[in-house]
Amino acid sequence: MKTDGAVVILSGGQDSTTCLAQTVSLYGGRRVYAITFQYGQRHGIEVELAREAAAHFGIAEHKVIPLDWYGQLTTSALLDTRTDIRQKANAACPNTVVDGRNMLFLLLGAIYAKNKGVHELVTGVCETDFSGYPDCRDVFVKSCNVTLNLAMDYPFRVVTPLMDLTKAETWALADRLGVFAYIREHTVTCYNGIPGAGCGECPSCKLRARGLRQYLEQRGTLC
Image (cartoon, rainbow, N blue to C red):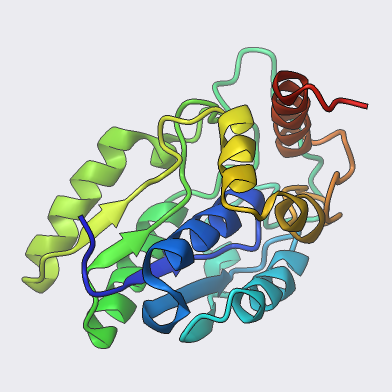
């Protein structure tokens, strides 16, 4: 169901940029807004790529919100460049988890959406290929949607286009939208801040590369 516009939580990564492209295809750029957070992440280049994506897709407005205090409240390899990114053998997820991140992003995105008079809040979280991040689960998003509606007495609709997609299926979606090359070249998934194919070593890069390979094999264009 379409509403009167949408706010996209835009990180500059593969998933959120694909969601931005899809949202623009639904509404046109005039009723699409994006919000990006600068929270001290080690791959801070994603903020610049988010700015470029917002300009590329011609959206109505793009806000970059500084949250540079985040590292005062929690520890994460994503916030501390002195910490090696790793996933212990028995750990559910890598040490790049930032506690409460998606809940905070949804809250701030909802405040922005209400200010703009739109009801749809789009986020690129996914649990099919997720790396154990608790705030990427569908049950979390649904519960947060209820809480936001109650907190602000406003009918938000949190939309997760990628929730049930594998990374290969996300690449396929980008291709159907006509933005495959843009997503491949102008987004950053790498926790070490290398755009495109990235470092190839961090968990995020491996997930992206595996999905791309699977999709290209399915498409018959792997080279």
